Image (cartoon, rainbow, N blue to C red; front, side):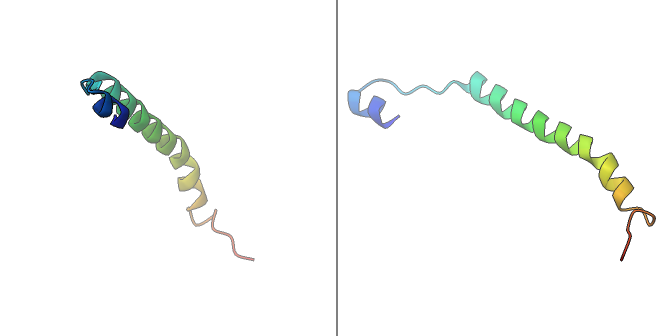
Length: 52
């Protein structure tokens, strides 16, 4: 962006690309969280909390 401003070129943001990338990142976070919840629930049950 700095080089574009120095060259006098117009600065345009690709809002569709920014939105798609942000949406994909949010989807990955949600899917990873949902995939790990069953294991977390199993490990936090009283039978899964073992002390030695």
